[in-house]
Image 1 (cartoon, rainbow, N blue to C red):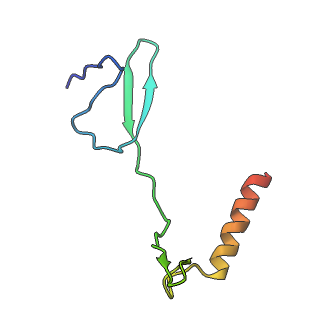
Image 2 (cartoon, rainbow, N blue to C red):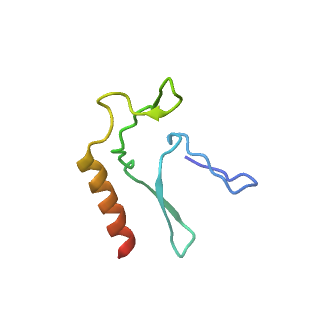
Length: 83
């Protein structure tokens, strides 16, 4: 397979899908090696907020994070930035 760069230095790969990630290595002789990377796992649950009659945004009943989860997230973030 041959790929040609356009005037903005972009190359398309027919077998690649949007969002695919590749490790790029350029050898001394100018050879370019693309290695596909595993997709990043997303462990973040998405919960849509609801608007109350008074106009406040809240979690739906029973869908909010637990106190332990909030505490763990705060502790993890704090420890990350204190190092």
